Image 1 (cartoon, one colour):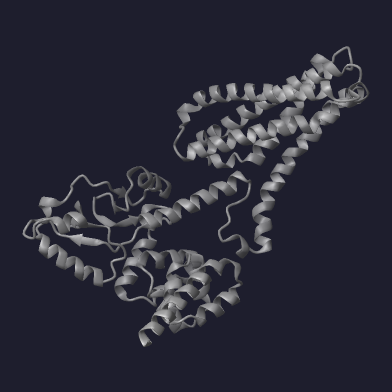
Image 2 (cartoon, one colour):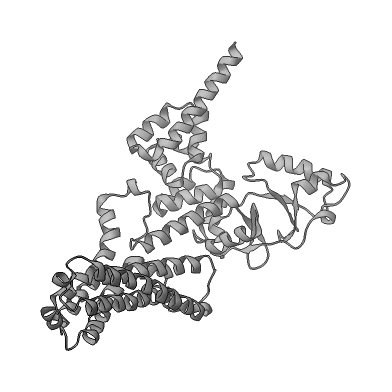
Length: 446
């Protein structure tokens, strides 16, 4: 019965950890701290290790010195480095002082690399083997290394006396090999490796293409510095994707979860872009003033202004979103701009004709069309149809080419956000609309 009770208690504790993990983001900092302290030590450790760096930093910031030391020492060196970067370099010395000498040296070395580079992502704890070891010796040695907190065991890496990477052995190959065989006889020498300065986006593409669980990281001399694992890259890819999505929505990248951003910070993140877009939209009023005579002569034209500019903005937003993502996934490159332009011209014409014809039919079949659109309703319908075609075509061209232009001059293509493209097309759409109206309605309404 005692054993059954222990199993039930353990299951209940695991359920409480799972439930707390799922509801964590919805809790206030005070509630998180309270519920975290209520957990038994084992379950608290499990939860702490599963939390994101930002949440770990929040808990550690409130912890007493001895408590802080015990939690930080649970973390692997690369996780401690992430924690220092999250809490700010002002906390660097305080956190390093809580570590044992070996871990302190590892963390200090990791902090020398950029946060979004391979060196900043890697773990310095991996399984090392010598080429002259026998399989039996290697297996025994791996058991010893596993006890010294090797973070992840996917592969064993074969290094020479200078710590240069010679080859790699999978554990399946190691355990299926004859006990007396040398490691150099079974290792693979054609190892895929990445330099310490490689960007996390490039590393993410390598993982996606090669279906790997870990890749070794080497410096310019071929000395192995660590490994980047799939879970490290998955987090990095999520951060990159979040950053791009924020930019596409014309928002500065949030450096913390949504509910943890203060109102003042949120206003700063969103207000800057909104101000720029608002100033851009002011040119719409300038364009309207330029065509004031046409509007006064044919008031009916004002009825279709929202329809015209929204069609162009929507088509431009679609095109920019598709191309930004295609560039991010390396589906298209700078040299492919002319192919993209050709496709978007055809797409823009087809979509413009479809929407234009719908607008034309709508005017032609609407009841009381003569009262609403004057006796020249057919010419008004033709004006709307041709204008929609022109604006949608211009929107798709602008939206698809702007990311290429930004990338060419060294900016992030994601800066060609949908709102930015829509603002550009709004102004030029009015010019297209009134130009078409002047040509078709000249001598009739204008």
